[in-house]
Image 1 (cartoon, helix red, strand yellow):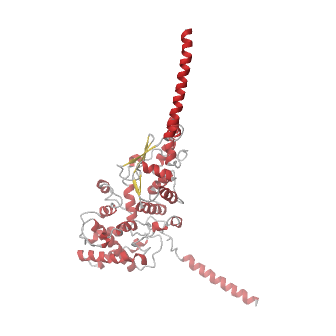
Image 2 (cartoon, helix red, strand yellow):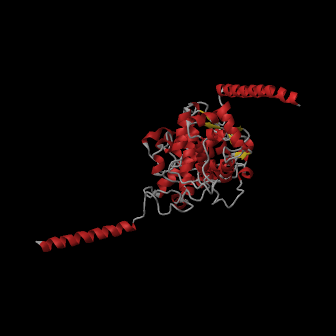
Image 3 (cartoon, rainbow, N blue to C red):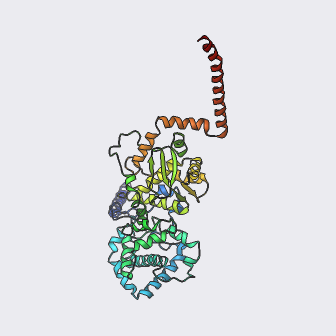
Length: 441
């Protein structure tokens, strides 16, 4: 009996070894082995970020790309994609096979863009998805840009609740297709008097209004996908001169650290002012005690955009981390609801998000578990200058005096009364002593 048991045990181990060998040869699926390449740019959101606010990354009404394909909750707009596709095919006269052949040739290049394996999709299935989603987006941008006629009663545009959700969904990190797919389909579909980039920027300008001359600077800009392109449009238009690094050797500078909250900065003499002329919300400047920050409308669109940009910057190692830097900076300033109120009073924050406490909580949470190098970000020199300004100096003592004795009307009255009493006491002493010395002289 013992001999049979040993033989059975040996066979089981051999089987396990074979299974292990097979598993060793199987490529990872949830995070593809090529996910570290520059070509990989469309990621699943890291679990640590999902814990903060899962809804910020999940599409609400439309699925773009493979990650949320066939989601039952997104079928409404999925049906309208076919209507938009029919509009384009009818207008251009080009057969569907023409577009399918274009995308099939890109199959390998498209698959490399996704961090999660999409091998469950056959070549034709992937091409079908890219053609449907890609041409839907292009037709959507053309309709909004008034390059093609639009039915005035089209529910996509007539029903006010759809557009805001649609715009937010198109900028979610998991809801993307490669930009080169959009560009190729756009160029091959029909001639256009305007570039694709111009139409995209006009589409999103309904959510973040920017001047035409600012948008023109981005018409030749390229991105990995819609989210990256729109993100880059703020990075490339920021004032490079004011944010250019001035000190290359900052590694040992003790002032290179996170900055204080807004209320504490005010206590040491820093003043805040909204910049209404900035081309980008990233244009933050500090000069002679004045912190100049572009005004921003804090709402659901901005919060979702920030979180998805940060997720992309955390996953795509070679891109600049400017949006992450901005959110960390604002999070430092707005530690409490009082800080938010101070920025609101200075017209830097227009609150359409909720209470001041909710905004402070948002920035506090969104900065958790985020990789952020304080030494290399685009505001590193500003951090140094601001922290050095907060060190001991005449402005610090003067600001402390003003804060202690003149912050409220009652404190001002008390300080004034004390000053008057001291003055009267000094005058009384003078008139008491002066006659004595005058007679003596």
